[in-house]
Image (cartoon, rainbow, N blue to C red; front, top):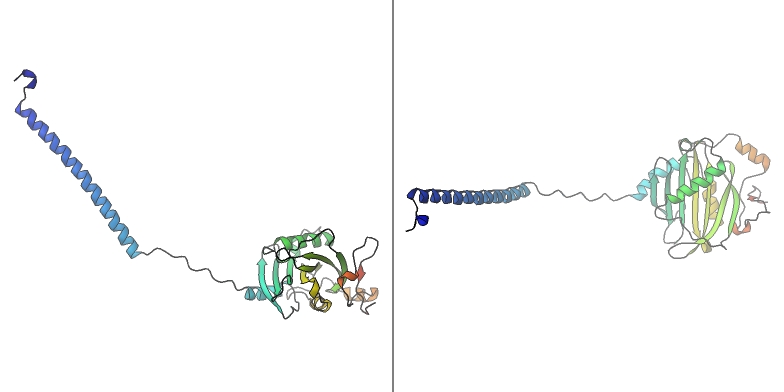
Length: 270
């Protein structure tokens, strides 16, 4: 045996001891991992068995009829046609509104709204408020219930009716519904009570336009329970000026014309 291959008994023992330590170390690591994995699985099973996963409760159904019935008296008093049903309501710090739909009729919608004067700048004149509030109301119409398509040749007209003892201008516009293309007439206006501006938008199929239905609704409008007429003495002033009352006729009787004054409904129908 050469000197390079010469070994001592002590060297062999040391080598064996080192190998044994490495083997034991590896076994310990494997055993530890096994305990952790098994323990983790057992723990997960125990947790899931003891505490089942939470399930979100089902969303409560929205009762539009109830919500509209509660909100309408805070907006205005009005006689809703018997064949109209509530479809939506919206409430925010700027404005609150409700909408009704005529049962089974495409393009027959009534939307009513209120914006308290406290939410409107004091220097806003009535004309500006009327334009802005109608725009806001239509923007808040998320279901696009009152949206219509208007072409260049669509007829427009204005008429005045008495609302809350004041002569009030109503805009009539012909158009079509976006989905089915039903020909409709849209009647809209904004008028004032003592505490708020009130919005009125009414859509009806042009073929079914009924002056009596429109006038019955307009004549029935009264302030909300917490509100009142916009000013005392308006009725007397109206009587002196000969304004007020109703006159039957189609909205097409008063086509917009720059040289033609807007019409005013007179109490004797003249």
